[in-house]
Length: 115
Image 1 (cartoon, rainbow, N blue to C red):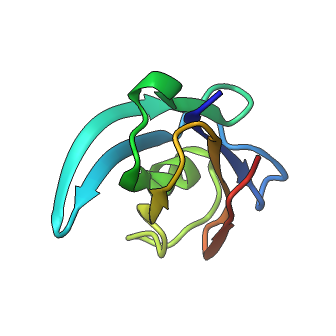
Image 2 (cartoon, rainbow, N blue to C red):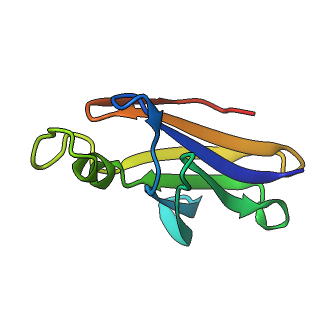
């Protein structure tokens, strides 16, 4: 059942954030090792790491949200206030599913451990 997924909701538009580049990396101390890069689907979702590839340890998600807001036609500053949202977190049990949603606007975001 394990694995890592995300879901991005564009709070400014009131809809999923489709086509956002999401990078996933492993962290060990100050070392960050890129694992993969994805784009969210039409529903703003991405399956990032399959259960068998998920290990206990520290991870980083990078959401290229500045590009999303520029492409949306929304009036944003240049450079954007939020360009890349970085979330560092840890996986403690690979048998569980890990879901990291992102609710974002051009000037703020929130996240939590979803289900």
